[in-house]
Picture (cartoon, rainbow over the protein chains, first blue to last red):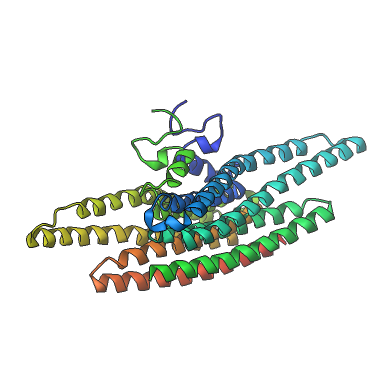
Length: 217
Length: 217
């Protein structure tokens, strides 16, 4: 294993430069979905940073249990998002594979369609999961801004900005996926859940940014 | 050099995991400034991806010169932002060093103040530069959305979301820095330029997101 390149464990264990370099090419992955997951993971990392800067500080003695719980939650969501960075690059493969299947006979067409639809539903679940986790990051940013070390309040602000951008980015990918999926019930449920998430992250962005500028003075 | 760790060349050549792991700790760097630069770099990478998926495509024959120029510009801004990821972690060091200087005599106090003020002005220029580059990414996202491969239009959308979040994040860091800087003319010029940038990136976000949803149908 050499530093700087992409390694077997996936993009997360490769260098930032390698990820950005490949992103910039015409390669189908990584793309906007992985970037959304990474943006939200950066937000989660910032929430953890605010919590880490509060744990053990006498000035914040009253909120020690809460900041420890916050750190625990932000690290859990960060781990989930790091996995989603990679997962978004893999589900695309299953869709591509299904697309390559033969469609010379009616039976082949039916089989190909069924596999493609299944792969598309699986693929659509990834940006949905990214949006859900991004909402959690936005919620945790509010807690970080409210109870965390005031010297790091701007980091809670950056966290909510990235969480909201990630949720909106994931929504674009959900939108694309539901355009290809025939299961209307799945599509309706997915799209209305995403809309709910976007309303919540937008409101949290306003709250946390207001709180951040207030505390910065 | 081992894979997965931080290497001498800086965070960009270290793994994504190492960056996120250190971000989550109480270490003073990396922090929100580096994350803002990285978010904007991801946006630039996505603009490059949209351009790369358009270069050489017959369907887009009429815009070949423009997409090549777009790719050239987005790769230049991406390189600048990748340097700013690292630079944000380094200017902090100069401020910390100045803070450690002795202040036992009046002369020492004056010398320390002068060095600290100089270091703070240098530090403030980094988030300002990040905001400027993020604005460029937002402008290039609009071009990518307008003339780029329609199959990648959602990536132009993700790019503008990250550019706007990065500009707002950088603004928070400018705000913090100007709170410590005594040069009011520098502070006023910096803050009013940042406000201009935020107005522009917010407007570009609305334009590009509108265009993206329109093209997604």
